[in-house]
Length: 301
Image (cartoon, rainbow, N blue to C red; front, side, top):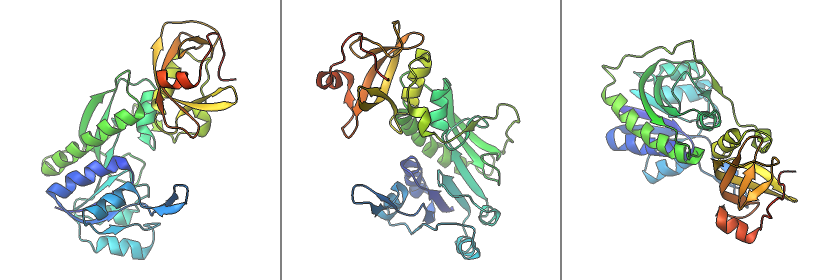
């Protein structure tokens, strides 16, 4: 099939690779290069970089709302457009241009967790299962009918980073299957019940409230790892906590019980991985060798 691929972050790259092996990619759309790094030089998105490495034509318009951008898209004469975390709203003229319309790979089991941060939100909410949906796009936010669904469990040790990679691979498998079966798949409208929205992560959410139950603190740490990273104060230093598990301890919220076990409002968490500001992430044992945590000390003040 003649495919237009539209995506931006690392999550989208395995899907682009899979499509390039099986179909003709007539164009790749991605967000424009952004200033990054210490020098603040424009850096291409992961999708743009991968597409260029594959020798594929790349476009990165600021908007698709202009008549010129829509005419250029229509002129590609695509059979289908695949959209994976692209980041721009597709006007109706773009949605209607490909022969089979536009399909979206969404990292949740719709209608749960429509929106921007479905992986983070699923872990933070304590969901035990998530997955990938191949959805026919329409004007609403992740409201289109679902063509194909793939499920995966959320393990108690999963971080957003781990689950992100698993879902990205699952999405690559699912889209190839969906395109192979496109003529026989029946779009299933999403039910009105069970709709939730995965709002963008607000910076204020990332600060750990040690008075919360340990299960909620653990979910926050894992759900915000590796980015933006749940954080707490250790003296005058801000540290990110990147991996944890619930443990059966008790004490004043924020109190160091033993090693890197911290008491919460109910129970406690054992920190498995942490990061000082400006430093690389470290396993807990390496971290506390460089930053001793006296038993009984209280962090997070």
